[in-house]
Length: 322
Image (cartoon, rainbow, N blue to C red):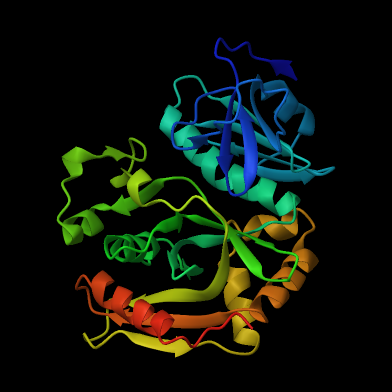
């Protein structure tokens, strides 16, 4: 494949417990501060720009936009570009001419980084997480379930954000699940801005095609790994009559199904031959944490009520980490 020349020096960033050396700016991420000599500091993943068009043709994938071969996942996003993730250590990006830079970065920060994590044995859950009394509490759910909104409500109560969108999980020497910090940004839809009394003109959209806003959160971002206490699945039921927020424990095989279904880009797990790895990983996770479902009904803004239920539970001291 032909490399595209780039005038900027590579910059090293930190996110999800990994060091990323990128040939193009990633303003959402935190720059690694210890030294400027990229050769002197350990790099986990290289992010490069190259023309991948001929490479895509060589793979001859037909109508499929995602394909996996020999440890590499290759995908195409219409009007955006081609993306190649290799062996857990390299992302190659080929932006389409005229593509929105924000949208290109959105795929690098989301799908590409999640695939790299999978290839390295890091479990990426689709959710956000905050820190309460030294423990991480993660919130998973489908798009629009309110994960970032709940985290923002908790952050406003003094519980710092650990990660938004992707929860990266590894294990420490003692067998505890550990959440690595993501990067200091949250993404909120317009109704959430309204609920918090925030003005959309104060924030940039995630990219030009959607009314989802990028909220800088440097002042309440937690930048160190934290052991995971619990995962809460957000299960909104807007069509039901309004009633109090419900918190229910999830047990047995339902835990495994829930954790598998909320793995970030879970459809790409089996494509990479990682189904057995995922099952073993979520089984290990399920056995070491609490798992709950939190349900809200009606269409009212209930983020603060949900935040109170979460903090009340956390403060009861039910979880000991044993």
